[in-house]
Length: 65
Image (cartoon, rainbow, N blue to C red; front, side):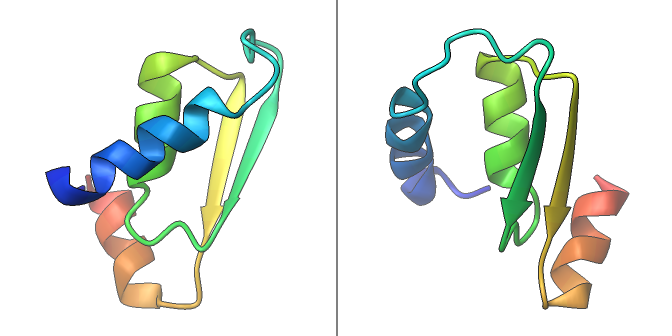
């Protein structure tokens, strides 16, 4: 994740109404390399998460991280 996109991810996380995601499952459509899911988990840990994206090479990079 590049720092230039981190600010918008932080703002998106602020918009999530439920502060406790510990029992939630999260789906990130258009996940690219999974940066949003990683930041969300670091901020508000969730039970499980999945990212999907049409760009297979980006998903492969996310899985390798």
